[in-house]
Structure formats: structure tokens, C-alpha cells
Length: 367
Image (cartoon, rainbow, N blue to C red; front, side, top):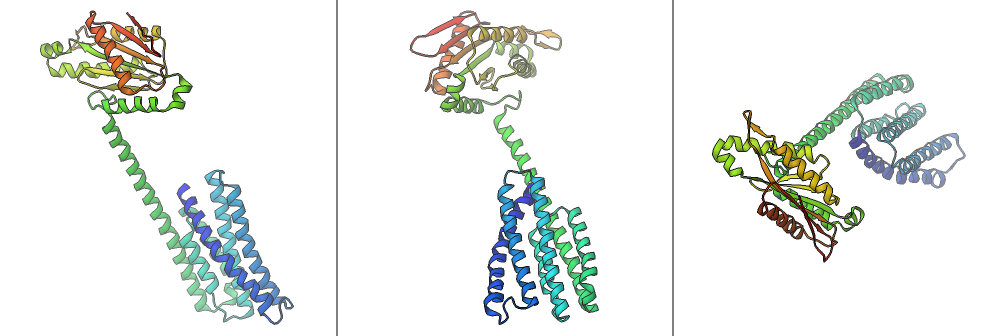
């Protein structure tokens, strides 16, 4: 529906661009080039019809401006009403032409039918009902003034116009469906590009980009105060692989991802950035106490991982950097976090070291 409204707006602008100069020319022709001017009823009727069509164009332009932020349904309703008004105008003009001269033909109505079918998009149900109603109105209003052959020709024109309208709607529906499929496929591909396939976590490149994006957004950093980055790796992971095999190692990595989702449910990003190295990003600074508590929960829940009912005693070392210093780069934050991870491993493993990056002075704490 939204795409139809967009295309109809363009079509209506084109129609108005045609209506205004043509009808202004007709008005000038009646007022200044006709010998009788508005002195005859015939000229007054044509003059009124020309003014009415210009008024419809002006009305649509005004409503379009007023309804720019209105719902799509309301905008489409206005377009649907205007399409009907344009058809009724052309039918009224053509009926008067036939009333004056039965040999005048039906060019006006035929042009309107095919023009609306080509330019105005409508859902199939609405267009079918609309064209059926228009045809019944034609049979009542215009047909009595026409020869049998002309009635047949215009009946065929109605059928062709409806077919064109339905084909147009079908083409739009197919195009939108294909566009949706392309968007969905792009989303899937984007996910594959951004994710680590084994764990379903973000990969290293994506984590880096998200941290960089936050650090480069000075307004966001000023509003939130900074960010927090966790790094941890699994202690003695190589020993688990050597003892139980690589399927067990893959199982541990996948389970680690599940533990991360449980311990850090409100993190801005969870990623696997190396073989057994992981990262957690918070888009805000947290306290050292909160960081240590999260580190303790992580160590505790990783220790519960089993392989075929066999406890694995998985442990990890955690480094944390709470960055509130303006102008920091990803490399600086990562280097400080990695330094804390190194300190945790150096001082006994299974530990969590926290570093606040907020100014010249350094502050460290450990669990």
C-alpha cells in the first residue's frame, strides 16, 4: 500500500501538470476567443466544467500537503476518492458532448479510463469494484446517447482498462515481494558476515566496529558517559581439546556463548574474537563492583559446563576496561582491557581485573 501511495502521488502530480495548462487554455478560449463568451448556456457549462477540474487539482495539491504525515490508509483513501472524482468529471463532460452531438464520440471518457488505469495503482479488489461501478454508471448515463457499436467499443475499453489496472497491481505486488526477499536475503548474508558460525556470537571485526562507532559518537559518549569492554579467554582450553577431542572443544565454545547470553543479557554486543577469546561490550560505563560481580558469575557458570555428563572444570580469566575518557580510540581501550586480562592470567587465572580509563591517573582493582 505504501508503494502504491508513493507512485500515485507522482502520477497525480503529472496529471495536475497536464490539467492546469490545458484547462487554463480552455478557459481562455471560452472567455476571449469565443464570440459569445459566457453569453450562452453551452459556454457557461463548459467554463464551469473546466473550472471544476482545476479546482479538483488544487484540492488534491492542498490535501497532499496537509496529509504528508497522515497514515498511508488515509492518503490512499484521498487518492481513491480523487480518482473517482476525475472519472465522474470526464463522464459528465463526455455525456454533455453526446447530448449536444450524438456523433461527438467517446474520446474523453476513453482517455480517462486508460489514463487512470495506467497511472493510478489500486488493490485488485477495489479496482474491480470501482470499474464495475463505473461501467454500470456508464450504462445508465451515457449508453442511451450512443449507438450500439459505440457502446460495445466502450464496453471493451472498460474491460481493457480493468485488465491494465489489475496487471499493474500484480506487477507491483510481484516487485515488492521480490524486493522483500532481497532485503531478507541481505539480512541473512549480513548476519553471516557479522557472526561467528560456531557460537552465533558477533565476530571480531563486528565487535571492533561497534566499539569504534560508540567511541566516535561524541554526542552519545557525552550522554552516556562512556562504555565498558570485557575480554576473557578460557584457561587451559588446549588441554580440554587434547584430552576430550575437538568436538568437546566446540561444545565448550558453544556453551560459553550460552553462558555469556545468560550473564550479560543487556550487553550491547557479545562476540568471539579469537579461538577461545571472547568480548562483551556495554554501551555505558558500569561500576567496578558491577564488573567484578559479572566476572564472578561468568567464572561460576562456566565451571558448570559438562561434556557427556563429565564435569570439565572450565575456568576463565577476565579483563575489564571502563572507559569514560573523551577521545579514546578502540586500540587504546582494547590495549587496556587486554592488559587487565594478562594481569588476571599472570596472577593465578580465574580472576577478574578492572581498569578505569578516565584521566591521567590510573585505577586498578582485582578480584
